[in-house]
Image (cartoon, rainbow, N blue to C red):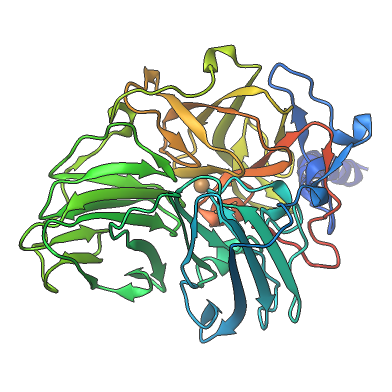
Length: 473
Ligand code: C2O
Ligand code: CU
């Protein structure tokens, strides 16, 4: 009797521990196929918060395509498994795509040999939703032997890039990306080289080449270097041998930027910084750290300087200019609080990212309607930096840690949110669809640091998982 009682007590005690654990484990399991837009919970930010299907969706993501008509720029990109990585048209980075502002761009993506399937996302270009390239949300992954056509108008001049958004944490790292430059309609003759930074197998490169590359330019030439960070973490860039101005951030011009010297600028993972300088007699050098950079000048050598200690603070750089909307009239106010805690992610125990205290897939779906003025506070107490990236929109930084922005409007699509930092941003909801809003350290996104901004009444016919094997992150 005593033994049986003891056994019963032991079993009960074990169940008391395992029961809830089992429940948490079970609850964390993500189905093989699911509608991303129906995961998590709607967050109305003070406005209506119904899921699309609650009202009967009126608009499908699949219908939110770019315009028809004859394209001005036509490109075919063929994705292949090659060597130890991936290529587009046999190179990584893939070919640089250039368009003039206002032109219609058409890109045909062909998958020749990438087993998991591929897509292309136009990072920083506010394209119509169906052209956004997110597998399982805005399209199906393009399987081997298949192709997909993207069409969009290059509406905003600036520096952008493209990359696969299928198994992106692996495919981007292994080479499926390239630069996209939209030049102003009235093209200036100034050289504007791309400086695309990427680390292949632990080796930092510029445009695929390790070390320092050279671009011939006469002294006195004004050069605009377009720095793109395609890596998972922030880098610092600077110009040696000349003063420079940061003339654009994330494809948006800075208003009245002043020259700086002895100062580096942070380039967020996924972000872009355009720097402009006049080539001196001895040449100048755009440095991106790890002894990697681009020499611009009359010869292949230019003075190198060590990384400056000072980092430019974009919160107070340049001078104010109209935003085109009034953030004080916000109709939706959201919190995006990134934390971390132990738990189960799809059945796997670990220390996982949280958003507003919730773990993937139980994350907020930020609900908006076209025309909403949105304010969002992004804070981070997770112990690591997160480069937060919202698709389909550009937001302006209002404040950091309670200090208001005083310089040029600081427009971003990728924002480096350090541990302990709080940013307030604002934007206009002017691009209907379902948009991912995630960390661009793509490993983190694959670990569930990914929420959505969703317009009311929009639904998606695509599913994560499914026959196409969609795995956006
Ligand atoms: Cu450059 Cu969702 O990513
Ligand atoms: Cu992150």
